[in-house]
Image (cartoon, rainbow, N blue to C red; front, top):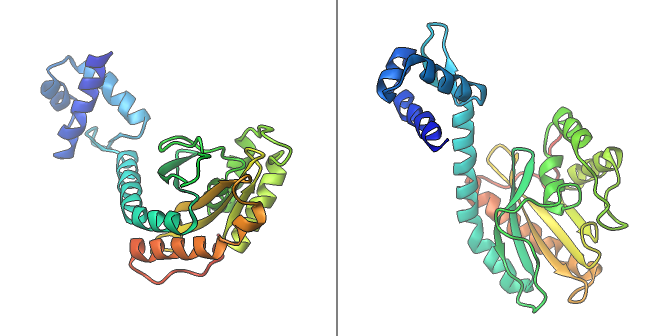
Length: 256
């Protein structure tokens, strides 16, 4: 299996030099044409290579899309981190940064609370997509058809009595989030944990990430946490300005 993966990955640098036909790929790999064809078909199915009308292969758009996502995620994390640290120093609570990738919302940065009670979240771990405040923001920014299609596919675990129950309720909540430009999770994932989140936007006004402040109610009440929303939004706006190099778009999520 490792040899197959190695051969498949070896095709990508070859095609980065320019389009190549089956024979050229087979020669470069030192394999029979049937083996090269099987590898190319697999890469084609995943969008990593594309077969042109002249039967030559080139790198596929999917590869560029993944590379762009990776670059954007790394860039926004690097830019956001000092702002997250500053926010954490001001409020003392756990601060997260998350992005939407491949139908998952993932944490890409975290600054721990100064208080003894810690969050179980981890960098690289998917969030509870139907209840997390960062997920609501990121999914609310999707075009309506994508939003609806995703909502219909999701499961709706009953984490707590405040969890979102079904696609209809979820879409209604996303509509509210789009209108107000911020989101909360008030005991929807864990009864004792509350969270407020604000969007980080690129130059085109679309969301590139979402950031949040979370705290257990033994440290701060939901009402007290909500009072931090202006500070959270100012932090998100500062990240947006630095990331995009532009003025911050209006607070509400633009309709699509």
